[in-house]
Amino acid sequence: MKIGLLTSGGDAPGMNAAIRSVVRTAIYHDHQVYGFKRGYLGLMNGEYLRMDSRRVGGILSRGGTILLTSRAPEFKLEEGVSKGVSVIREAGLDALIVIGGNGSQTGAYEIFKQGIPVIGIASTIDNDLWGTDKTIGFDTAVNNAMDAVDKIRDTATSHERVFVVEVMGRDVGFIAMHCGVAVGADEIIIPEIPYDLSKLSLKIKDAFMLGKKHFIIVLAEGVDKAPQFCQKLYEVSGIEPKISTLGYLQRGGDPTYTDRFLATTFGNYAVKALMEGQSGKIVGIRHHQLTLIDMKDSVGKVKKVNTSLYDLTEILSI
Ligand code: F6P
Image 1 (cartoon, protein in one colour):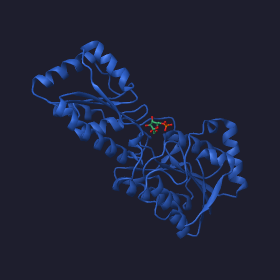
Image 2: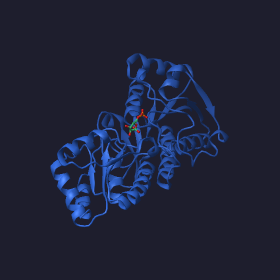
Image 3: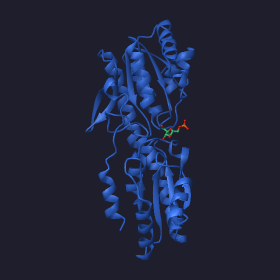
Image 4: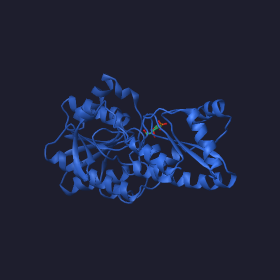
């Protein structure tokens, strides 16, 4: 087989490990891999290169993606998809593997619907892809956020301050919830759970009265930007928290063990799936087992955060 490969959407630590695994698994089984640059942009423009084993050497432990990535809004249009499909056909490719999150897998599903064998690999720091327990990059992003909040807590404690730390996650609260639990946040604000500023204000005041030396609020970007959130809190309570927006540092850096392992096993499974004639499926993991998720079931849906973790924070932040 001649297999096309691309990474698309926001980069995620572990994408490189997945690229390496796809390329070497394919070569091991006497197939060829062609990597498209800048995701769907490169697919539409016919920008690809032959991948060999040496080209993917030394990348397993590196963040980012050697294939580069982009958001490519043009690909959301019918014209963009048919351009991409023509390139695949003209290049004589037998199949395509797409490493990415929700938007990227939506694009992959469109290509599949045009009769091209396609397999997706679940990869986004947001962890919101429906059908998989974990996506490549989430663990590293949470660890990056956790390290940052641990540092912020030192200075918050020394000055007895309230902090609002804004984390990524687009419209969902996975990073905020998991980071919040791991750092022992005093409050976690996510889009999935309505918040009450009067209650929060009382909680902050009580906490300091009870001898707490800091109050850390982990805020998901999907709720509000930290400055706006703090302004609203100030109007209700007179409290002026310090702000820290973690931003892109969450998405960079070397992937953790979990993401390297996930990406390596996902990449291998994706090639094997194609070899078995599977198509229109996304490689993910459910209950610790690798799994193939039907694109038609996953696309357009968003995975739900386990909101009971919020109760855990309420109990442990006393
Ligand atoms: O989807 C990953 C993500 O990092 C989101 O958490 C964030 O909202 C978005 O990408 C940022 O997108 P961009 O890199 O295009 O600014």
